[in-house]
Image: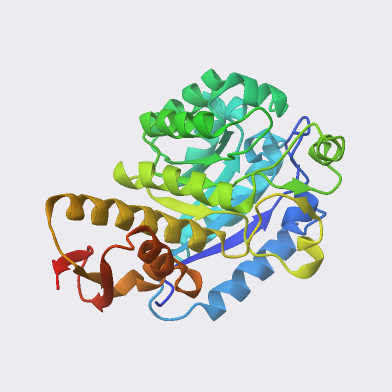
Length: 338
């Protein structure tokens, strides 16, 4: 599928953060050690713009890592002025940045609106006080709620970032966090299951046996439920799992459910769970020895799963019926007596 959305990313690792959360080492995860300067920014933006292909409908400049609204105000203005100059010339369509809930105020949002920022991503991580405290987030659940409401009040797109599997978290707490996030009506969410990064407090806790990260399959199943909840409520999930890293960066991950294709694995589990429920309901109301299942061609890979493991799983679960799978030009699976 042709790429229609291009993001020109700039990383500001730990900048604007007044303390370090137990899980965080953005120097490793962003593979960046210093703040971008004006010359570097302009050069990178121009390089991106020169390579963008026909068919791209949305281009944005984004500031990731750190807490953008925690930066010195003059630094914010310098970065935003560069981004806004390209926006005013209609060379880009939006400006995106990420920050913390407790760094959102009327003053900060007024500044962002002045430079035509379009999207604010909020690192919420959890909607449970004990999880936030154990992770040393330094803000409260109420801070998340207040910041989310204020961001939407100022007219920005709101994206909320969640981290299932933090210290003191559980399957039930993560699901409840997702439910509470739905109530905030974000325009999108990112789901990053917690991994243990080198040179963090979480690494120390893990090596002391005081913290156990989610296993990969546990994270996939949990995130499939969370993905289902957001999808049902028409909230786009724009990212699941950390971006694929090169070997040097991947080697800084000590433990946890990191996989370069994590999003695909979660969607595949979501489709498998959905299909299992539909087949079960169909067989409760219909008697047949053979069931033909037409799967949507546009996401057939997710329905099949890696190495067609979803098909094998379903044939084992429903071993009293012969299941026949076919691809078809349909939006939803179609179940038919064969």
